[in-house]
Image (cartoon, one colour):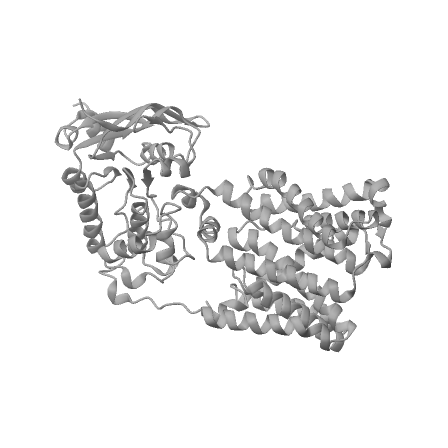
Length: 319
Length: 239
């Protein structure tokens, strides 16, 4: 891993740069950075459950969408934007508890498919409840209800920082160690005293809060939401790709992944508009094939095994 | 009257049409080393799975220190003081050796790190504390797995063929640790195919065959038991 001092210094420099960005950047770049910070927050949220425990979720956009709709429905009622943000997180939290109880009993592809199905159910549910949500036409918010772009930027910035701090705190805690043990071998983890049900549920609930809040900010930033955008499968895919690209189950992997994927996508789009997605795909494939631990694996220092300490030849079990 | 820390009564486990355990009884004396032997497929590991809570589909009764643990989840059984190792090594491959041990300590144990380092030092693996589990040799993995269960200071430890695949030096270290801990009062139940080890360590031996206890007692007694000989070598043809 990166040394503690290097990590803290990098974090401090990054925070200062992002904090002063609105003073020097134009609207286009500020808008791009807002989206980038949103993806950092979403990638960290996905990392909390899937990176730490190995339970690969294809449905975290559900919490993102629910947060968006909570804000879109509350803002026209005169609720302050910051309260809408909290409401978005709370709606996601309320949804995550029963869903976690149900879905975390499943493992591997069954969990992944259940979460994918959940995302679809949420999309259809919101589409069909026309009276409340406007159905497929979505909800358009009046501009005077919305905070400024700078406010949206700083709010997303705080959410991304909070998500990263949460992941760092978990990673270095006993709870994080238990989650990583679950990822490695859930049965063995339970056999050394880890209450796997409690830990997985806690990680799942924490991982739902951030997308709920980020979804609420997004709707204030775009002033429009519809089911296709709120529950887009592409949001799920992006979270996964960015974490895999940067380094799953690490603190800085999702930040690195989100930054590089978003940045490269922008550059490829500007330079090679016809082939930008293909180029990005080739790059992602290369990282997955040649760096399965993501880019963070490049910074990982592994202690060498000292074979002279091992006594005698190794035998294999006889079954 | 003997003080039994682990009492198993009428444990039955059926998989589809196969009756893997047919009403097994077991009495483990506190502070003893009990051996479980038997041919492959006789139900030894299934019995460990049931006792440890890894398999919760059995009927009967398993009492640990007077408390019913049959059907309880493994983490609860572990917290009650019963730990086990697996037939094939199950260290956490992407956790360091130190993390592998610390995760098995009780949740609020502030001395977990120093205890883990002390255990590693005792088996001369202290140089490996930052090495990933996957980078260890198989024998070292088995030893780390054994040290892991010691982190919570359990009163009963089930060892499932702990020496399988371990080189002679590490194997000797392992058995020395078992003797040392047993001397301090820890109870062991060991599945093992090496009869010298069983003979040397165990005060009582249970022989399982086709899901049933066919003999129990001191090793010298069970090794001459006709049913045991038949289970291992088959029935003698009549002349």
